[in-house]
Image (cartoon, rainbow, N blue to C red; front, side, top):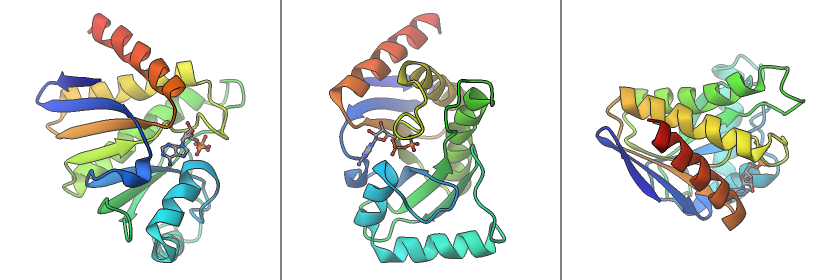
Length: 185
Ligand code: ADP
């Protein structure tokens, strides 16, 4: 599914984010930036050891050794990936909705797009942040993810943004959410 948002294009596709050829892909990282399971593990495997080394450097230097907090984003090179850049953001762990999970999830998308623009990136691929191991209900996460990206694209000349959904099931949920958002626009 492909939609024009102002001058920009927003697309929903099923696929593997490690294979995307957008200038940047977004990683649903954990705060340590040292890799993990799910999409994070897949990105590190495909990018190679040099990504881990760069993440360690970012952690030590940019973050003064601290963990990256939920909703924040940092950028590295893509190394062995087809994408030139990886933007790492940490999604919130779902604990029932009372720990500002919605706001933190929206910040992930907004901060990733801001960082992309600061680095002159004009095309970006997102995974479905927080809806795997972090257990954010996907119907709710899809609306927040899409509304945040649509709002950003309405306000900024960006280029191309895609959501890479890892299953047909996830794709259909994002597609339904997108159709509802477009009806309300
Ligand atoms: P989180 O910890 O933020 O929940 P996960 O990696 O567990 O992150 O899951 C986030 C989403 O990424 C899930 O929908 C999962 O199915 C999906 N995913 C896993 N591997 C890939 C991949 N290679 N490409 C795109 N999406 C993926």
